[in-house]
Image (cartoon, rainbow, N blue to C red; front, side, top):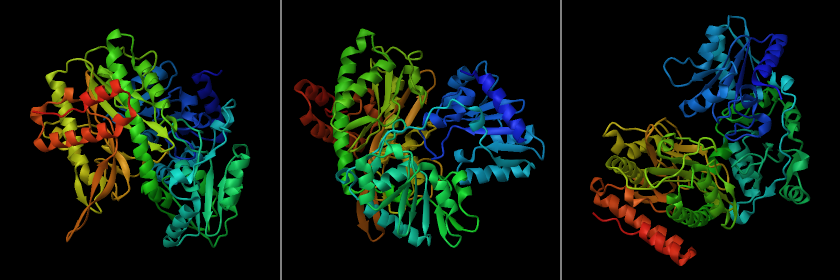
Length: 594
């Protein structure tokens, strides 16, 4: 197998032949996915860096990988000896990629990118920024010439997601989509986002880790819908299902010909934040194109009653699994035999015992002590800390059930917490409760609510760097938009039926991390002369560690919220437990008193 240095030499030879002075290689795929198939891991292949976020840039005499603070340590280790420089994004001394290229290259030189790996919007932005320096951006797939032993695309068959779980048929969803297309005065919609396609056609698969999606493209027209998918992924049953739903089927890459054959008179709808530039280039230049947020993206974010009923069932199952796990953890931590990897495996075992469990919804973050302060920490056999009956433990995990998707973070003490740990934990809890109890007018955006989760910390000069809430799919991607709750402005208003996380945190480097995460659902609150008001329903069901709470920092209303929540947790989960498990849960859900 070629070493990293040898791969870069081959790439540079291909660059010289193509007259290209630099090549940008992102860690993405043609579907704008968060988790991607091995086939598309081009940045991993060229650099050896395996983090989920990062971009490699190779010039004829230099190479660098840009990544954020979550991966500084990992990237430094993986890039060591490769000749590739670690470019630490977010630090004042680190130039971003385009300004760096503008200083490294001369006017008239070319930068090559695989247009499949960049959205229309990202490609156009890069092209415009490079043009200022007189540098040309060109669409060229150089990696295809040098990565000759890349893995095959997954050929796994997909399955039909039953309407008893989905709540709406494909015909109903297509009707809603076409109504939105009509509003946009568009006749054809080009789809590349895998979760949008899975939702629209009520299909699920296992082509990438954690997200139950199927590698495919789709075209929806006024009277026709086509799924572009590798034929080996179809079974007799799924082929018949698609036929009965009136969906045409074509080969995965046949979408390029389909796009090229669109009549010039047609109006084509695209989501430039998702659709890759390569597909866009196949659409006839004379076609009018409407670049707007995917209508499916918006439709999918509003969960129907059947979906939310499924989510509530999944939360009970998850609560049962977590009860068994944390009881087991308490009973075994003193052995000194547990580490961050083994507890992750045990949690998976407990979840897998639940009906309709399909797998994890993301890679578990199990951070003991100092590792809890690394927001996106991922334990390995080499890095895993041994759990001891001291310090605190942060566990962020989730499950994929046919009923729905879960995502929960709990921070627990494994010994006697310090005064500072209790203060920090309580500040996070106060923020969590403030958001959970918010009542807000219809039309409110997530950025307008974010302060609620942070104020108790901000008052003391404390903050956290991640968002407070992300949308969550229904037996789909655990990170789903378009809604979120974070400091950055997002024009999408929170609407009844949206489902997302509530996860403030506090991290003390080299000491510990704290995060408390439940999933919440937007429901009606009250209608007054001032309009419709909304609120959140907390749907996650598992106790919050009372041992870490400084009661003196809590208001009476906050204590009441916690006690009501714990009653709800106990009532929902206890009937599914054995007697000793019920006793354990009863203690954890007992009333908090001053």
